[in-house]
Length: 291
Figure 1 (spheres, rainbow, N blue to C red):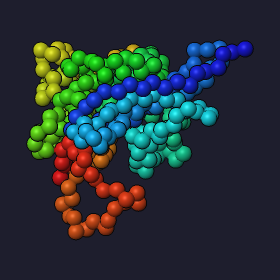
Figure 2 (cartoon, rainbow, N blue to C red; figure 1 turned 30 degrees about the vertical axis):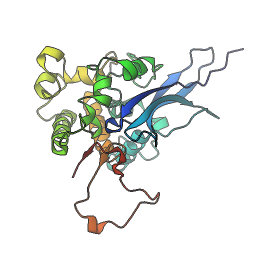
Figure 3 (cartoon, rainbow, N blue to C red; figure 1 turned 90 degrees about the vertical axis):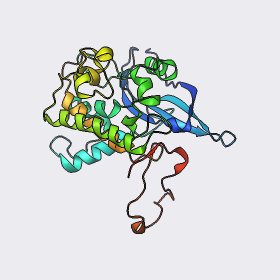
Figure 4 (spheres, helix red, strand yellow; figure 1 turned 180 degrees about the vertical axis):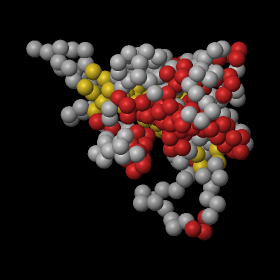
C-alpha cells in the first residue's frame, strides 16, 4: 500500500523591533514523492505576536502549512485573491469569471510569482523547474535566510533592511516618510515600465535601472530578468513583464496593510467611521506614513 502523505508544519521565531514589521503570505503547489501522487497547496505566513510587557518588540513567527481535505492548517492566499479579483474585473480574457487561486494556469501563475517576489525575492520557496512555475519547495532555504542569512542577501534586505520599501515600509527607524515614498515610487516606476515595455526591458542592468538599490560593484552584470527569477532561472516560459506587474500589485497592496503603513487621510471630515470589523489604521506598528 502507498504510504500516506504527511501533513507538516514548521515554526521558528526571531525578534525584531516593531518598526521592522513584516508580513508574508505566499502559496504554491507541492507534490508528494510517495507512490500516490497528491497535490497539496502550501501556504507560508510570517506574522506578529505582541508582548504587552515588552512594548518595543514583537515576535515574528514563520509557519508552513498544507491545505488538504481535513487539512492541518488553513490560510487564505490574500495577495493572490486580491489580484485575481482585480484581474477578473479588468481583464476577463486572461482571468475569466470563475478563476480562483486553486485553478490558475501557468500563464496566470506568472503574475502570482511576481506577487510573491517581494516576500521571497530570491525565489527560495519554489523549485527551480524547467517546466513548472508553481511547484513549492520545502522552504528550508527560505527559513535559513530569513532567520540567519547575511544582511546583504535579498531575503534579509526585503524583510529587515534597505528593501523594506517593497512592503511600503521605511528602511530605518527615523527615515523621513517622504524619502520612503520616493524610494517606493522609484521601484514602482521601473517595474511598471518593465511590465508594459516602456523604455525598460528585462535585459537592462540592475545598476542602471535601480541604482539606488544596486551598484555595479555588487550586482555586476545582473539584469532585471535575473532579479525577478532569483534562484529559479530554469523555467523556460518565464514572462518577466507579468512578474513585474505582480511586484507592482504586491507593493500597492502592502501600502494599504495596517501592519506595514499608516495612512493619514487628507479628507478626514469624509470619514464615515470604522470598518465592519471595527478597525482603523493603528499607529502601533507604524513604519512610515504615506499621504
